[in-house]
Image (cartoon, rainbow, N blue to C red):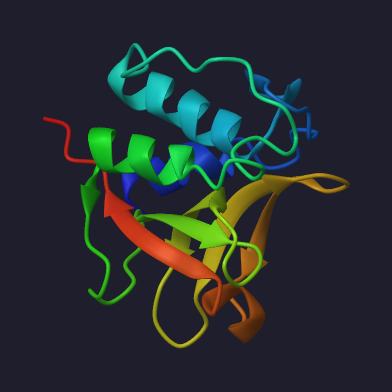
Length: 143
């Protein structure tokens, strides 16, 4: 049986990619997916997300997404991957962490659910190229 966060995230599969959006079936980006799943499971989002550009945080080298994740979730970096964990990616070595997904399956053939340009919300294998980009793992610790 999948954790509730995975079940909720799978219901978003097929939602088109739309920068800054967070509406199931209409559009979302990677953060919008997590925001929408959070609302479904826990009610209101923990913080208001300001508008952001496609290159947000990069020019300043600001770890805004990582900082926000640590503020609202429990970091478990170094622990084995587990279904339901939220993972944060650095898309290039030395770049700020800017992509986020939800582990849908751990073990021998791990997978994750995320939204990205040109694909929308999909469940992808957590292949070696994706794994090497993981910057941190988190668990949502809500009652």
